[in-house]
Image 1 (cartoon, rainbow, N blue to C red):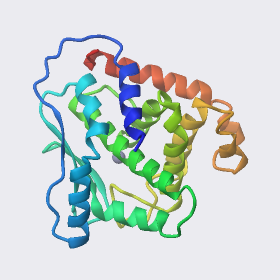
Image 2 (tube, helix red, strand yellow):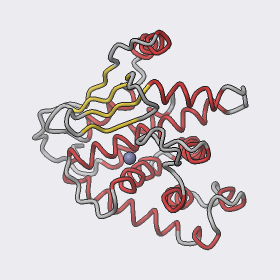
Image 3 (tube, rainbow, N blue to C red):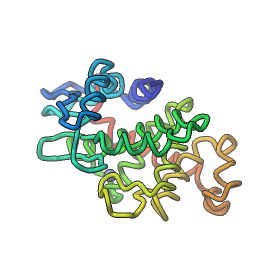
Length: 248
Ligand SMILES: [Zn+2]
């Protein structure tokens, strides 16, 4: 999955200063055993491939944490993805991944695999965003969901080659009504103003490349006009939040 380049590239750019590494924790990946035979097979496969390390590893180089934060694929009993501040841990559930994979790739459509990878990466980055805000106690001024979406867009802005995939993944999560933090709610997590805010940030990164968002009616033309300024402002804010915590 090329998404790994995204984390490495984006974090290198964000890590603007060399702060002393006072942290003693690590970002860790885990693949706890699953009981359901279908998930157990996936668990074995993903653990062998160690698919999370390439995405999570770069966090250790740039964003030291004071205690261990686990990022894991797990059998959860629901189609969700969560950040648990108590453990602390980011959990992506096999139930969600399998459901998404079946819904997106079941029809054998061209490019479906990329869209799935984008949706997976979006959810992972969003949850890592929650973990970063909490663990580094970042002084964000927007609600938590918006903050986690913003960080995802900011990371993506530094890795334009992944942009298309992640933006399409986010759109599909909205269209399929996926609410990964409240599974079974029947609502789309990415809907209404939240989706508009997110799409605006993606669009603002590359208005020409993303003209289709306006053409296809995903983003109102009037809103799109201000999106270049919007992503620039948001990027500056996040660099400000993160710089005191980075190490080069
Ligand atoms: Zn969230």
